[in-house]
Image (cartoon, rainbow, N blue to C red; front, side, top):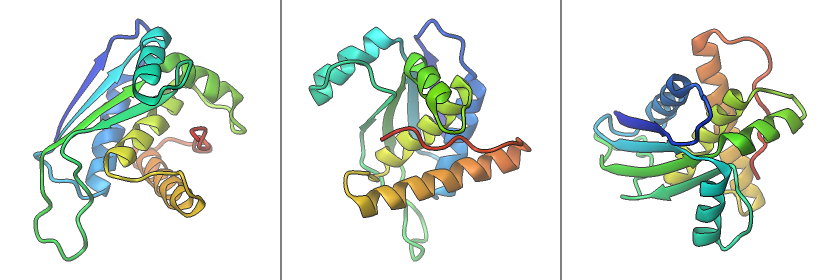
Length: 165
């Protein structure tokens, strides 16, 4: 799995954890190991520009996903999943810090960035949360991936509650 993490935000973030949880999420979703993913960490101004340009919405947001080859998780019957360019995930640590502090289970900016990384991966794989049933499926899968990764890493305490909407 080729995953690049590029921090352009000027904020110190745990890039290794972002890389690790992205790799874990993609393996859990059975994405081909030759697939490629890019994660870019930007400041609030850059995220706001992307949010306006691509979503026509004001202000910075927490995470944006830009799919490339529109890869999907393989079915259980698939012998060999396809591989390709998953796309880009863009994260904003300033928004993540605020969301983590305001969450029902307060958590750090880095924990929020880990959650947002999984959220972004799922969007790249075609998951969405516009409808209640889609939201339940996506957020359930997101929680299972984050919890599994945290357990594998031996991290204790409650997992971050989803703060993305």
